[in-house]
Amino acid sequence: MPPIKLTVALPIFAILVCFNLEQAQARIDGTVRGRIRVGDNRFTVTGVPPATPLPQVTVKRVIVSVRALGVDTNGELNVINPTFFGVTDSNGNFNLQWQDNTRNNVPTTLHITVWFDSSTAVGETGTTRPAVLFRVGSVVLGGIASADQSFDRNVNSRDPNLGSLTAAANDETAAYLTTDEFFHNIVRGSSVLPQRMPGLVVKTQVPNFNFSFGVTPLSHEVFVAAATPRTRPMVLAHELGHSLTWNALDLNVAPIVPLTDYVFPPGGLAPEWKRTTREFSKAAFLEGMADAWAVVWAFGSNANAIFSSGSITFNVESATAVNSAGQVVLDCKSVINAHEFPFCHTAALMDLLDNDGAGNGDEVNLSIATIANTLNRFNNCVGNGCLHELGVDALNHHDFRCNANGSSRRAQIRRVWILNGINGGPTSFCLP
Image 1 (spheres, rainbow, N blue to C red):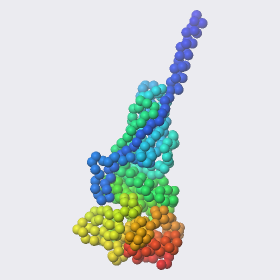
Image 2 (image 1 turned 90 degrees about the vertical axis):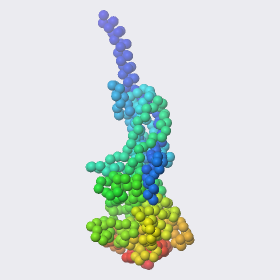
Image 3 (image 1 turned 60 degrees about the vertical axis):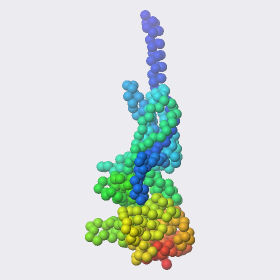
Image 4 (image 1 turned 90 degrees about the horizontal axis):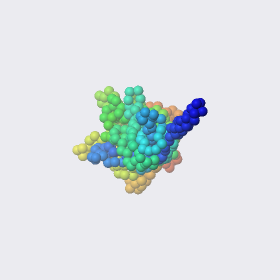
């Protein structure tokens, strides 16, 4: 009898062993392709709402991940499979590996996540999450909420092409589009900025901000109010301009103090600047510079930029501001103390950057890199023209000119300051 039991038990034991090995070795893998899109819900810089339906644009240079949703012994979906990462290309395309350790064959379900974090990495990065260039998220109690969006897709082949995956348009997607354009078209034009600006966080939907408010208290932290990335994208670009400036100066904290460095409006209990308000030279220059970077984002450096804010239309090339009644409310080339008006600094800085040559009489065409490098040349000291100079006239337009590299360049900048009416104000350390 015992031998008979043994001959029956052995086949059963062998079958059980093979079954367990098969279960343990279950695995399928492949490559998934697709394209990330989103509706561009941003108003134009002149306040025109987007078309309906929203124009679809690809989401470039964004971090994407994929994970196969496995099944457990009860057939329930689980998340034990590895996550693979990558970055979309300039057309929004991705091509990522995937792996399912709970199945022997398709079909399976792939979980694709768009993180709305940008990276300079190219293509796949395996199971390693790419380093973040900038991140977008919304402010919540206790921190920041990720802007990620996910898609679950059932696939019947190992190498599926999912086509276009369209994210829902919101404040965060609008902020991503603007910030990506700003980095791609401006930041990468400098040798200094790509080393210093990675890690920037754009925080949207900040509570208790008014409808168009933004602030950049730290070099790597931008705050904007709810709806601002959609309805006032130039406000976000302005704040990104501040971040660029703080990073070019190699400062971690904003050098401008709202309660002391701005002029209080008549009867006002708090400082409030506008493009046409008279300010101390420090605030006028730094706000004008942030606006200049926003103009470059919106129009490029060579366009005859015209934009509106409230009831005022600003013509950057002519350095004039006109109200809805057609009255000139600011003409930088003729107004007294033009250096006190932020918009006059914007117009002058755009004259440094544009390539209009003799057409405007300035014959100056400085690059983004040159402007950033000039900011980077401020010495780490506290005297006149230094990085840590004290007072409401520190870090002003004359300090910028005096820190330019070489007498010929300083002369070029001075000529542009004179043409735009901003050559007055507190002087710096260089002569003239």
